[in-house]
Length: 484
Image 1: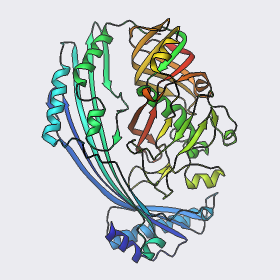
Image 2: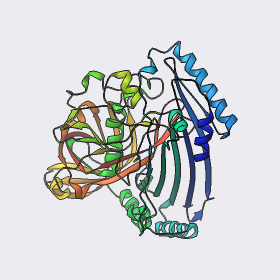
Image 3: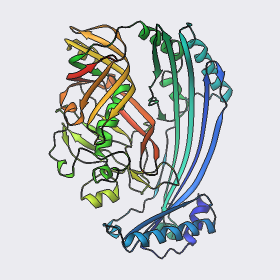
Image 4: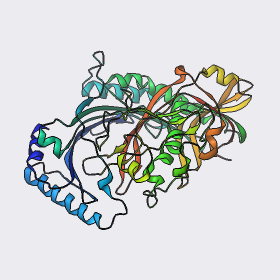
């Protein structure tokens, strides 16, 4: 990184602003499926992007040739694009004051974390796989652990010339998962650890494997898949809905996170993934949810999946409430979108790699805990369903009308759990769904979740986000079974 800073300092961009962002990622996946070890994969991806603001234009170019000539070529391309955009852009990028940050960030490391080597990790996965095959009705099963180590450098040219360090960040990500599929009497049911979003993703060491519940998950998940085969279908009707954190991950992501992305509100996503029902004039007055709804953008929680010290435009990360007591306060918009919209935002200009430009992305988007225990929430329900772990989702291109399905449901009748149901689904409208929030779980129901699979942008960027949440109870929700 220091050598690249030195090479960058020697360039002569002759522009108003120029920055270098270097990203190096080592990714590794260990997986066992149906008791067979799949090929271990390990990849190295490394490169740099140069960003230029010049004469009101904005341009960028990336290179994997981390040499003086490679950086110079990328700089020339970025400058050329800035000059082209200056003649066509409706926005003067020279108005944006981009930071010149200095500092370091590193994912948390614990001295008590296990130090399993690859052989031992594969033995863990083999053991969970064998434990899952407990019945002939189990037709597919497996477990996986993905590891990611990323180093990043962000430095402006002015800082590099002055000898300033810029920002160096180092991330360690651990992503465990397990899934079992059962088939019987013409029905197929899948139960998993974390769902299709692979929800037990965090920053840190191999202690995350333990904290996720992967150890011992093979038999438990298989038993729950078999239980679903014999369970009745989820009932249909208006009733209370109690969502556990594994499903709250999806609910927050789709019906709060994406609608609040400022570039989407400004119309930048309409070609690919739609716009938003949220408009710029709603901030500060719009009732997004009940008084119990408090939503924070918080990239400072040490072990959450999308924690960092600075975003990819160099803006320092700090916690902000996006929704306070149900009222919409600010969007998810980085420095450039803030300047375009004239609205305060957050440090969330993020790119998935060195060869993608930063755009407005979710990071850690969390619901603040309330005061209710899970038992209290269940006791307060006369008729309802508890749902856990997402299995399907559908939402319109303004991120408003949605329909979500879960792997597992449990009936609640007269304040008591009354048996497992399969194929539980619910539907709603983002603009009104959160206003039906009637209880928010306390810290005892709170879990830190995440997903590596958030897609957005042209060309597409798949990025990591975190969602921490307590259990939440909603009233008078349209619930239906898979046959409804």
